[in-house]
Length: 432
Image (cartoon, rainbow, N blue to C red):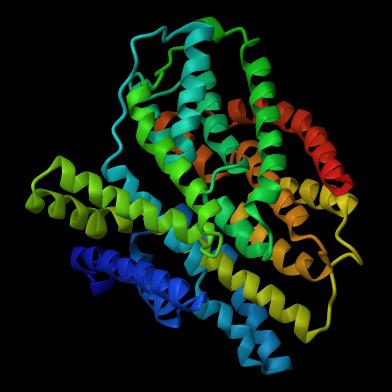
C-alpha cells in the first residue's frame, strides 16, 4: 500500500485541513484576504485523499479538472500570465473552510423523535419540516441521519426519498451554512445577505408550498412512515443559525462564511467540554479531525476540480478576449441564466462548477451583485432537486435503494412549477 493510500496519510490529512481552517480564519480576521499557506494545506489534503475517492468521484473529478488543465495550459501558451494561476493557490479556501467547519457539528448533533403522529399526511408534514430545519445547519448529514432511521431492510420508499431530497435542497435558498451560500458570496462579490435573503427565502417558501401540495396528493401518502425530529434536537442548530444572523448584524465587517465557520467549531468545543471530561472531549474532537474531516474528501475534491475548471475558463476568455457576458445583467438575463444553470444540472454538471463559472463570466456585466446572488442560490436549490445525478440524490439511490426515475418523475413537475415563481421574484427584485 502506498503512502497516499495508507491510514496514516489519511488521518494526517485531516490535520492539514484543520491547519487550512485556522490559517484562513487568521488571514480573514487580520487582513480580510485569503492565505496562500492555507491553499497549499488544502492541496496537500486533496493529494493525500485521491486514492480514497470512489470510482464515481474519480470519474467526476477527472471530467471536471481535465478541461480546466487543458484550458489553462493553452491560455499560458498563448499569453503567459502568472495571475491566471492564483485561483489555484487560493483553492476555494473560504468555501472549503465553511464545509470543513460545519462538519464538526456532527460530533454533537443527536437526533431523537418526538411522540406525535409519524405516519400518513401528518407524519409527512412533521418529518419534512423538522428535517428541513435541522438540514439548514448540518446540511446533507441531516438527510443521512433521518434516512438511517426511516429505512426498512436498508431501503426507503419513493415518497420518503423525495421528501428527504426536498428537505435538503430547499435549504439552499436561505441557509448561510450551505456551500451554496459560500459559493454565491464568492461568485457575486459585493452582494449583501440582508439584501438578497428576503427574495431567496420567498422562493424557498414557494418551494415548501409546492412540495406540500404535490406530495400530500400522492396516492402513497397514507402509507408514509416518518421520523419527526423532537424540539430538543432542533434547539442547537436553530440557536446557532440565530447567533450567526445576530452577529452578522452586529459585526458586518466579518464575512458570513467566517462567522459560520468560527461559531460552528467554537460551539462544538464548548458543548464537548460541558458534556464530557477534558480528556474525553479532546479525544472526540481530535477523532473528528483525523477521521471525520477525511470523510468529506469527495466534496472537497469537487471544489478543487471546479476551481481548476473555473480558472481555465477565465484564463481562456482573457487570452482569446472572449466576452460571454451580456451588456447588462438584468432580470431577463437572470431568468435565462437560471434556466441554463438548472438545465446543466439535469445533464450532470454540479452547481459548484456551473455557479463558479457563471459568477466569473457574469460579474463584469453585473451592476447589482445581489441579483446575481439570487439567481445562483435559486439555481443551486433547483438543480440539486431536479437532477438525479446530484450528490444528495446519488446518496439516496446508492445507500437506500431509491430509484432515480422515481425521483426524476416527482421532481421535474416541481421544478417546472417553481421556475415561473423564481422568474417573478427576479423581476420583482429588479423593480424594487
